Amino acid sequence: MAGSTHQDSGPRRVVVRGVNWLGDAVMTLPALMRLRERFPEARISILTHEKLEQFWRGQAVVDEVIAFARGDSVLKVAGGLRAQGFDLALVLPNSPRSALEAWFARIPKRVGYARTGRTWLLTQAVPPRPGGVRMRKRSTAEIRDLIERSAAAATIGESAHQIHEYLNLVAALGANPVPVAPALNIADKEVASTRAELLDAWLRERGFAQPLVLLGLNPGAEYGPAKRWPAENFAASAREVCRRRPNCAWIAFGGPGDATVCAEIERMANGCVLSLAGRTTLRQLMALLKSCRVVLTNDSGPMHLAAALGTPVVVPFGSTSPELTGPGLPGDTRHAILRLPTPCSPCFLRECPIDFRCMTGITVDAAVCAVLERL
Image (cartoon, rainbow, N blue to C red):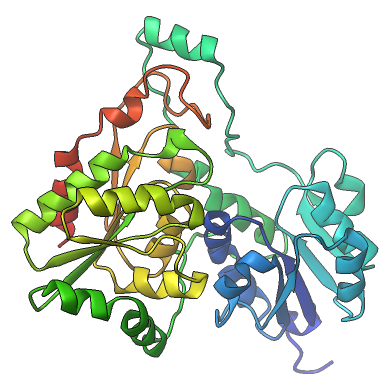
């Protein structure tokens, strides 16, 4: 047809099967931004677990959010998709279930990584990315051997970052694979209303000096204790920053499971920390992270959220690798990565089988200096 372009022959309705964890969802944003560039006329829907529905609301990379509940069967999810007539499914997770949903929905084109037990469900099974690095857990015996030999710490290149895994998938559809920084939107009005509801009264009661510098603490990490810098270090860092900068106030973030540790940090911090653990919705968490000038955080979903909202983060890394799952775009100097080179790091274990040296060796002074540099 005269005047048609390459884009005119592209899919009209696209469903992206989203990942199930908050931090991973943030790391898919560059791929979705590139997918939007590739198919600007398509209607793009995100299929996501209901716990992440608020994350996707209002984001320009998708036109529609389709949420499913924890107990929904594959057939129930697939039935909902089939009724909408999608012509392309991009399956971001590597699970058989996510591919089955698209297969049962009879979506004619189904794109995802080739993995055991699901390749036959895809019409375009993308082979593993050259240069990709799998997060292999070390055994206790391997860890002890590395330490005894004083082996050099493992080195991983920036091209191994998880962002590139998702970009490689959209590149299979002709999208640009060059990474862009994950970016999230939240309206100023929502930020202001959240602060008024959850924070302003506490700040007035404490008589904090103006202009106020709001900072964030995130001492939790759902994966396990090996990713968690000691709680007393978070509290000591908050106290020291407030000693040097009296106009600073801290918010401690976390889910219901982090309420105890955040309350303990609030107690140890002598009045400069307010714990909101378990008291915020996901949208409220986003709004407050946007309000912070800096967030001191473990490698976690809120770390990725803060970075995507434009807030610098200071992150102690131990059992995991910033080259694989660091905040924002790899190499972004707005963020500070704190790490102690040890032969066994990264081990990718949930719990440290030895003495937790990779985390306990990261000092409070290092965190305080990194926070103050970003102020």
